[in-house]
Image (cartoon, rainbow, N blue to C red; front, side, top):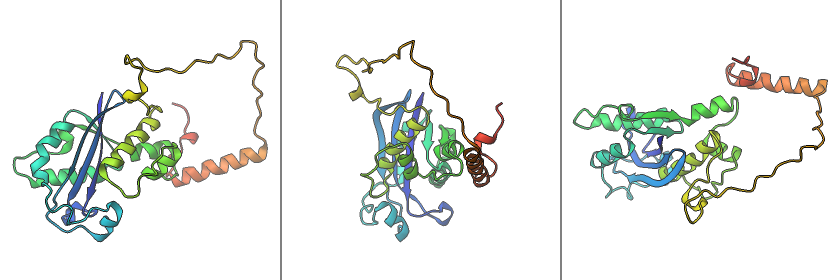
Length: 237
């Protein structure tokens, strides 16, 4: 399975107001392994960047003055993502901007969904953690992923961080790069520790009435915040 973790930076928030993509960053996963392949490109948007956007990503108009336009790199970009599943945090935002850029070009290039599938990790996170904060920074804290080096947003940096978050969310596999392998390419596996067969049974401590009431109150709060989507209140299928 080939997946492309993708992020973009833009001049503003709404493509319908003429805002454009100024950076695309992608990293490749194959069978849940980071391959080291990536696509990264800064773009000349032919318009000014909103001050609020500059405060987020730190990319200036002057920096982009000599960069290529989206139409100059669209072929390389589509070749890189073609046939893969895109993994994007808040996918409607990035997909909307990419489709806006494709629509501006001649040749009827269609929509990005014509080239690859799309998985929204924000939707996935809301399903897994209803009623909680699910921004990329919040997920890094929840899954103990170090993003201390992330002072400003950047498309390639954010896609690398999102790859770690996605792998933790869906199975906990993040250390699957080549440096986790032995010299001959074999996977390094830790020692398996087996508990003695005659060990005492684990002690079971049941919740008292106050603890049960507090638990139910917490579930009620989650259910209200998530619009009735609290997973712990749904009957098993």
